[in-house]
Length: 492
Image 1 (tube, one colour):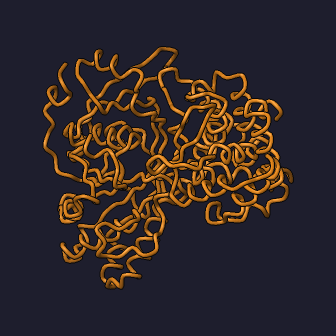
Image 2 (image 1 turned 30 degrees about the vertical axis):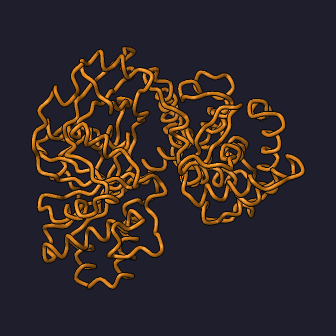
């Protein structure tokens, strides 16, 4: 069978986009959009990826010359729809940990206009100790600060060489937060006022919201798909058909440079994305994070299985309609319609969305996606929301592990190993808590609930101060460890 490289001649286009992140989501979202813009919008640009971490997919992407196939599938008007697209918008991928010079050289590219990223919710964060001459800096914002400073110096502060940054991480005001930390590093490193002014006036850090379910590589179907399309592709990337990108700009939109309307792509340019963000993060992403860790521990493996489960689906539906939506402001009918659409998207039979994929960095995800609903519900109703509170206990029990495999903790599901992936400090904390000795499940639940909920750096506040939360989480943990996850869910 031919390889994808033998089936297409990739056009040579100038690199206009530097993309921090080479994973499934950005490849089926941003890079797919750029491919459409090249075809229909006259964008004529390519994407250079940058690995945010030392270990990543760069070698595999470069091994296929940046080429891969998106597999979009779903149901429209009651009929199954399937669309295969060869993506030719990716120029390649740079690993700044092994080739820093290649990374920083992109700062001198006169065609570059956009920096786009998805480094997970934990990526836009300050790391104490990052220096300008590090190769590279530990943090993503540190890398951006050093990159932009190199660009400023190379082009002598030319305002036309400023950068439009559009982060896709699911945190509130992602662009504003990235800019804030870039400025923090700039001041710490003693960079000149001219550079600060250039950042403020020549660059734009946009806030954005992304919405597309991307399960990624369809492992179980990969061989059959390759037979169908007629060539071998080790980087198949599956996603749903639905797509929405909301971009909040400061002062002006950048649609003149990123011609999404001309290409017919569902992108909303706005000066206030608050409604869209709150709706999507707390309903779609919140439903995921609220449900999947408990569901995995009952033996399920995919989102579709959750929708079909007479145990998990009622819990998910109750959490959505009786806790998350009542915690929110806005038109209740509109929110409920969106939630109904979300459940239909979850049921897409063509999307194999693995629960373990969603479990990545669940602590920061819970803080962003579900904690606002939990606290909002309590503020409005004066009591704890049952499903959301239980989901916090399910998260804690999912993170039970003491041994590492690579950079992940090893969990156990009825004798089956699974990997728990999060930031090193989060994993170290859980490992230490689970290594300790406890006389019984009740003592274990109380001690671990107290320790986890009091981690203000994780949650943005000490959650042991929330009336009744610590005791309820401890009680759920005891039940999970003595009666099992499924029986605990039934008892809700």
